[in-house]
Length: 243
Image (cartoon, rainbow, N blue to C red):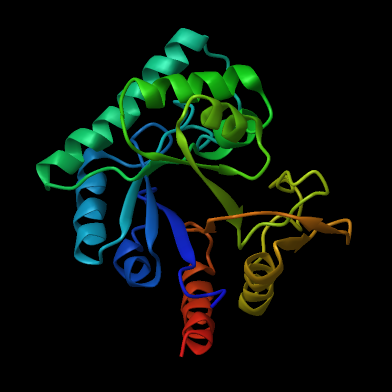
């Protein structure tokens, strides 16, 4: 029963061009909104694939920074960042409308995701952008994060997110990508991390401690070179449990 409705999400539209293979293997997707990666043409193509496979569609807005793939906190005013995020979310909403589809959630990308999890100012900017563009959508955010707490105070629906293919520190922050141990590439290791989070709400950290974590949705990064094999294996294991 634990594994009946496990939601696997994936960051897509980032130029890897593997969405046709990914979509049958996931239940939610987070589409890049043309500021850290992607294009309008890519967005349209990914929406079409998501609709075909009945995959829930979310916006994946970021710092406007293609040079660093949105994985660096850049110098930008609060006002300019909020406007950029509103424009990014609205772009996806408009492209969805062209295909009679609707937005399900918003998940910030990269450096914005990480800093909004711990910094009230950035969290507020993200939530302002969501409130001003969408009336009924979820925020995908880390368990026990600043942004999740503030969102609930503002009556924005939250789904806690955890990562299948990333390692954690004891404070539940993600291990920096500068570390060689930041990414999980072995499919069995990824499955075991997912299984432990789903069954027991626990995760083993890089410091070898067992920490409580709650999650409603679980991410495998679309640009992980092992994403396809990992997702095929996870689907196989989930199907075994659901027989």
